[in-house]
Length: 140
Image (cartoon, rainbow, N blue to C red):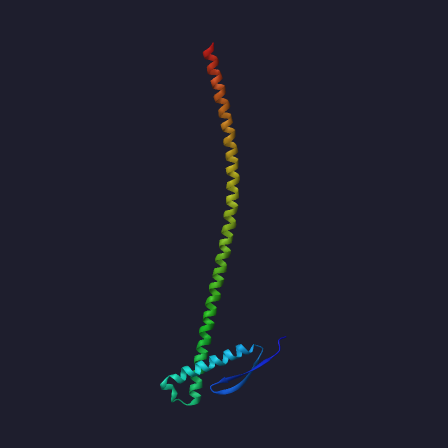
């Protein structure tokens, strides 16, 4: 089991000690994200006059909005990934099916080539036999 780690971070000008199983860099990244959200709200003049608790509620709503949008994006990517995996499976199935057909056709081609050689040989024998018969009839 991974040991708990702590990191001191600054959020909205105050120092907090965050604890968790994540690395300090991750905890700092979380604090930076929160600070960016605070700065977004504070940069809008209409919101700068709001009471502190209303500002925090707006920040919480913004974070929740980001969360649900990210969750929807993940769901879309997972759906796309499942669709891609299904398409890959279908393509592999088609590939194997086509490879089997190719192998069957190669066997059939070999059989037809062998049959063609037999027929060519038989034709040559018949032509030679006909030539002998015609030459034998002409010499008499």
